[in-house]
Image (cartoon, rainbow, N blue to C red):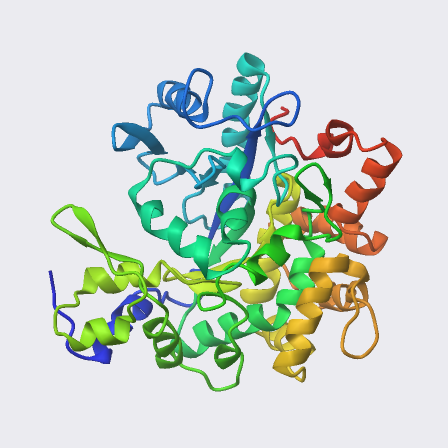
Length: 432
């Protein structure tokens, strides 16, 4: 292992993400809950559980399983596609880096076919919403993954909703490339700046433990009560002129969780990486571990990972990827999108972000308008490629209507007398 002696070594992780202009790709990470016919949790352990389901997928696909503590945790295809599990047994599909949206859609369609076969066999629903419709954290078995032995107790004491985040939320992330340090920081900064409107556009988690939560993005609200040292909107990274070093300084001060040594984990909870590096014992592998532990609305992995959206049904997940294509791979669109909220103060941005969690597109902006108005402005800025443009259609319809999926779900639930299955049926994503 290479020892770390200076901050210049820390840049290599981020510099490794720089791509040749014009070669930008997309990666999609798409999470869902595995539920029974009554919208109850399918637990990881035992007959008919998520582990058994993963074993069925391993046989169906021939993908390579990854085991921890004698249990199957994930599957990986030769081309890099992956099916992984989140702490509460949420299932996640990870695409390869795709050159265009047609390729992303094809990989997602194959995955949906696998889920449809499982649904035919088990009757399970694979629910694409940002929050579990019935369960509380204590109702859900935690995945037997060593990493979570360190993360779970830390989050349990860091803030009031950390375990809700681990076990009862699901998101959709889009990963995309940057072509220089300046380009990387502009893209990171712009996602932070747009986080309130993006959260409002993709709000899809109004239900908490069987009841309406009072939030359109309960998942978004949960993140504000999880661990502010490693999540949220990072003020220092929303400013003009930021560099890779600013991001590195942010990560250096995030409390550590663990490092790897001799094939196992070493507890480093609460220490700062800055102090660990000063001992002379820190390695490049330790830094890569540390880079995986911040969970803000956008981060480097090393590509840009947009994290602000609730999980949404597949057609809307593809629309999010198309939005990324039209905003972050077109310089004019990127400049215009960045300017939309650049005058907001950090306090105004946080307040509007909280308004988005509470009210989605009906949330108020600092100038007294609604987030639906800002979303419509953003859609006018988007300049998608010819291939990406058709995938924007579901989002265009939603923004024209002015109601998020969450707002529609609330109306469905109220009209159905609180029947979760009736309200959430359109979010079950395993249908062919």
